[in-house]
Image (cartoon, rainbow, N blue to C red; front, side, top):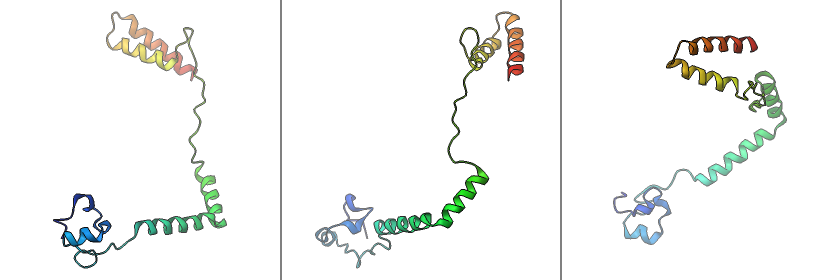
Amino acid sequence: ELADVPKKYIFEPWKMPASVQEEVACIIGKDYPKPIVDHSEAYKFARKSIGEVRRKDTSKDEAKKIVKKHGSRKRPSNNRTKVKTADNESKSRQRKRLKKKATSPKDGLVQSNLSNFLKIVREDA
């Protein structure tokens, strides 16, 4: 049916002008079915229907109940201030740096320093 249809219209053959339909012997509605759904009209209808439902007081009340039960859909702000060490390095960054050193220690002190640091961090938290 669509073998001779130009690539430009292959996914939406009903948009072919009548002259092209005749040229390729693919008349929409005769040789090839018309579209079942007009997507732009369906979109408008769906938007209108959803808008009507959302504007109802019962919908607003239901939304308030859901927020009350499950909490806000907004993400919580991440305004927590980071605790800085004496050299102005965050504890998490310092912990990562010390763990990195602990994986390939030059001497035994690195591992013990890491353990002591982690104990202090856990006590502060």
